[in-house]
Image 1 (tube, one colour):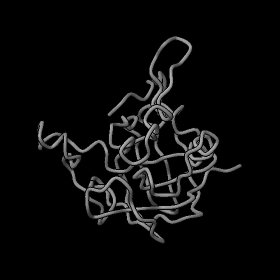
Image 2 (cartoon, rainbow, N blue to C red):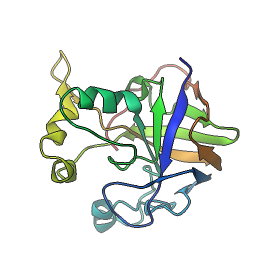
Image 3 (cartoon, helix red, strand yellow):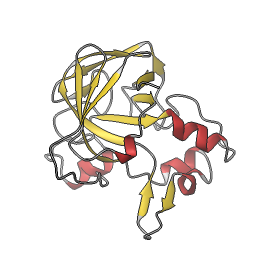
Image 4 (cartoon, rainbow, N blue to C red):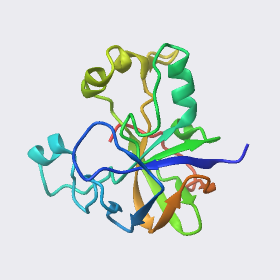
Length: 180
């Protein structure tokens, strides 16, 4: 299966879930037009209180639809936008991609992956027990965060459901994504 966009979401307010919309516009160096997290500097509320001048490495949130299928099997019925993602993808193992991977999305947009979403207690406030379901332990004991990846917009463009996603890996050696 080729990688593609399943749905897109945005919300101008800082709410946990985001409504699905027909299309989003990615703005270079800023993020999703009309989204609360759009901006060159950090917009995540807890990070703004720490240092409002730090660069925004969380401009775009992507989650694989395969996670929703896994969670459905564990009793969590989730719809697109429920976990606050901007882009729900399919056919792409986002969590295994190295830091610096570039995703070409649709005809023009280009996003560079910066790290993993670090799920917080808000996810349990949304659905009790969901935090534990999006965290796991690897065989070596490392914490595995499954709540999606974050990126910055290199080239803007309109993104909508059905758009293709092409992966461009960074030069070797690759560095694993870490929380951002």
